[in-house]
Length: 327
Image 1 (cartoon, helix red, strand yellow):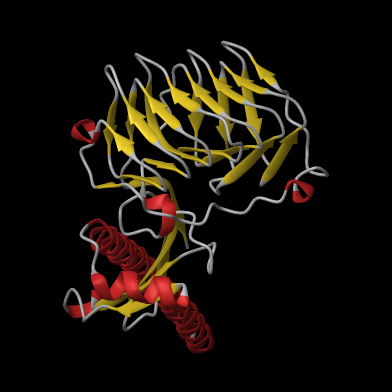
Image 2: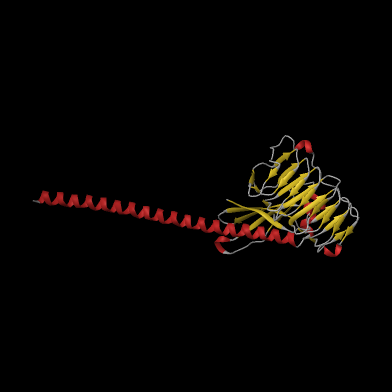
């Protein structure tokens, strides 16, 4: 009986030891799980805070461009880029700042585009998020691209013609009372350089885009050796500026729409009959007249070597045309 009691006590001790070991394992696992959940929650919190910082920086950069901050503009015009780091934002565990870059992607040329990169960083965890923007327009951009209309000859605003934005011409400007921005006659600016040989081997684009037709742009440059007529939709899915070079004349017809930043260059002239794009630049390198007909609304800009006749509306201003979030 004494031996049996000793054996029973031994079994109980072993059982208790096993139970204690299991409880210790469960407790450790619970502690590890709790710690992991806490780290995941903190990482999520810091990621959100970093995203807010990055977006705040992007909005700050947009504000500087809109109000034409002289320091920002001077840096971009002279070096191609402006950089800045904000003061410390937030408090506690989410303390951090944002780092800004505002650059001219075409430097030393200035085609009116600006890229904004804003990085929000949390000081303690080093969590970071990046926001990238592409903007066009605004009088803070340099050269002829600051204008809604530029002519290497004369500008004639007649009938119901209106220019919302700046206008400049190497010659005279008639109808300056219908120009909401600055009117600068006898203002010689160098025309942008687009060498046709650089485009001839690029993807060919259909020279006639009819009404209800949609053409998707996936490359940076396109070419046609014919007249180019747009009556449907051109969709730039690259989020970067795309250039279409037409050897012949360009006509923008009723129903035409452009999505994303697009520049159409022609060796001839431009005729706009109807358009509703918010990011279209038309460049006419020919010497004959380009025109915006009555009833037309062009939200973009026209740059022409020859005379520009405006019977409709040309509206040009600062626009954000692409916004990307990156981890």
